[in-house]
Image 1 (cartoon, helix red, strand yellow):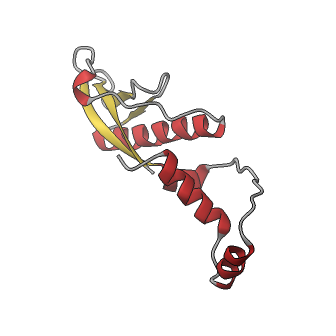
Image 2 (cartoon, helix red, strand yellow; image 1 turned 135 degrees about the vertical axis):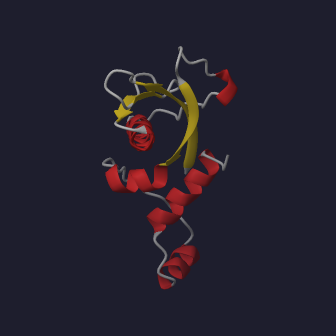
Image 3 (tube, rainbow, N blue to C red; image 1 turned 30 degrees about the vertical axis):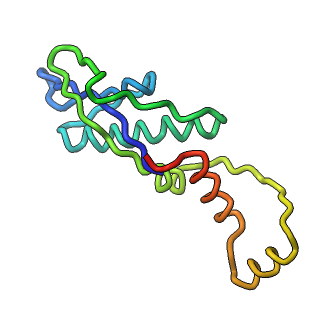
Amino acid sequence: MKLVYPAVFYPDEEEGGYTVEVPDLPGCVSEGDDMAEAILMAVDAASGWILGEWENGEATPDASGLGDIRPEDGGIVSLIALDMDAYAEKYGKTAVRKNLTIPAYLNTAAEAAGINFSKVLQDALEQRLFPAV
């Protein structure tokens, strides 16, 4: 799943670098020595924030429109893109075991085809719950 959120970058005039806030994710703040690092750090911080919510059973917050964000003086508003599938695969910890019932003929055919039941169910749930934006 891919998500996009607006972020506000504030230049640090004294020490250089940038502080970055993601307004739609309360408390999600990071920083970088330059703009490139600040963007990467913002993506990492926002991805971790979202993953933490998911692991606690919370919903994904809606993203504000780019024009709805009003930064303080000197703030630069930009979008950041999150690849939550890659982030969750790398950093996700929580897995939940589910039992399910399917018709025997589907089980036989799927096993013969070497289908990973967990992956199919996960993909189907993501498509149903988080349609492409």
